[in-house]
Length: 254
Image 1 (tube, rainbow, N blue to C red):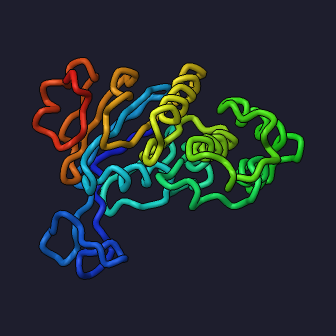
Image 2: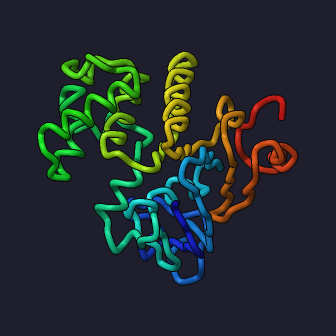
């Protein structure tokens, strides 16, 4: 279970930027910009949650609190009963993260060596590492391809390698930030099919997107952020009417 309570996060720059000169969308009067304001959310184990919103709505900022990549200015984030800040290793083991540009996060030249990186840093035995790598690659249909160079894979295959790397940590929840960006339709379908298989096996999925095509029919729940606040939290079947007023790309039938 991931539990977010009254979370507020402000950009750190004194000029209201995020540290890279990028201004936040909302000032709070003290020179800092507020990325998230008073967000509360509970994500049960095994749930397929779609977290949607326009660019700049706070989606990526929110999920980076789930395993301590960011810390809240106010409020709490708790994973399986433990505040994230009290045990970062546990949080990062239980909540696997796949970023929007996985190729920027690869640390090894070949598939298996990259997938093994996380378990190696946990200090596991070689036998356990090899077992986790084999299981993770099989889960994303890359069994037997551990010796292949990552830079020779397609975009969809690289996305699956990144997912395998997160799975090798044996997480309870897998968080994916815009996993379909830059993928063609067959690759989108392949990645989504593997995510659904993972959920069926008990892994919770948090899928961050601004584009609800393909995914909404498979979600257990839809949460939409707007200007750093929760604008919608509902089962997909009851969310269609509300989507008309929100700046996200929705399925045509809605």
